[in-house]
Amino acid sequence: MKKIRVAIIGQGRSGRDIHGAYLITDPRFQITAAVDPLEDRQRRAAQEYHCDVYRDYHQLFKRRDLDLVVNATYSQLHAPISLAFLKAGYNVLCEKPLAATVKEVDRLIVTARKSKKVLAIFQQSRFAPYFVQLQQVIRSGVLGRIVQISIAFNGFSRRWDWQTLQSRNGGSLANTGPHPLDQALQLFGEGQPKVACFMDHTDNSFGNAEDHVKVILSGAGHPTIDLEVSCCCAYPCFNYNIYGTRGGLKATQANMEWKYYKRSEAPRHKLTKEPLFNPDGTPAYPHEALVWHTGFWPAVAQGAMAGKPAAPAAKAGAKSKATGYTPAAPVSNLTAAFYSMLYRTLTRGAPLAITPEQVRRQIAVIDECRRQNPRIYPSPC
Image 1 (cartoon, one colour):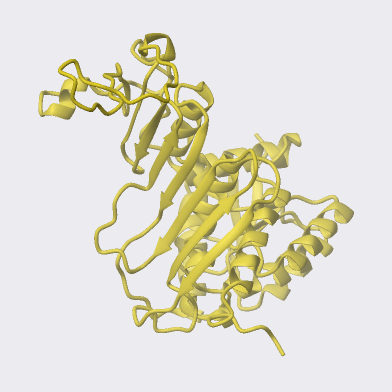
Image 2: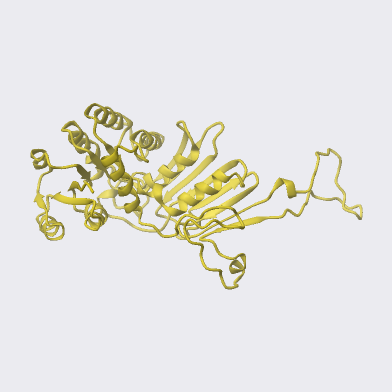
């Protein structure tokens, strides 16, 4: 088994608590270097990883024993530091957001191609079990044509850290937004969507970047996607609400329910221009009783929704007789799934599941959202 030698730049919430915490548990990877300007974090990294530590990431350029550099620095440094390591001939895994502008992404893509090195972006929510299951239901076709997808990654909180600053490429859309945006664009389909965006900066954020965002993505032949990322929602509801021509789906990260009718079972009607009447001759409204079929994830007996004891949850990979779907595992380590994908790319040359070209669409949406909100993001002089 080939062991991937890793250097992590940054020992903050992402570099230490996500990447470092995972990599020390995976025998396929070895942390050989860690970088952070704070001495306390350097000492902690040396104790936890048993690796070399540095104050300045430039010191890594002297090393040729690195198979992967993880860029978990401040957001505004993601693009320039990733670019420098790609130019120097290193494989790079960059935290989100990948960049502040599409121009920066284009430079990264061109440089990665020229250097023949891997540029991966840590969009681990692509592997979320609920998102895998949601896509499976949509692909099955039982919901019909998807008309609208509403996504809410909301909550109520106040923030006063560096991720509230525009100078650090902060704000709700760049901090939390890359996760639902990545999912939204996968569900939207190919092509760049038309964007309408409404941003607000409230006193819940101590910086100057937005903390409330509404984004509408649309395009001919595509579902309309309504995305919210807000810190001002005291009553958060479902993460997903999907409208289809034959049914719908609602989902959180932990639970999902969908229902649909079958056209073969529906009453037959034809358009009429004449008034409708009840049997007693009074005016009538079009009404019918459709037979609804339901699905649940994790799979439970329908009676559980009415307060009856639930059936045991279906195991991952067990096909449901009622719906015909194979449920995704309800619990999963998204970081492990991402690094397994990346390991296959680094050792076998397998294609990346999340490509820089896909993430470019995401940055283009963020770019356009900021352009449409000059009150918060004034145009440079």
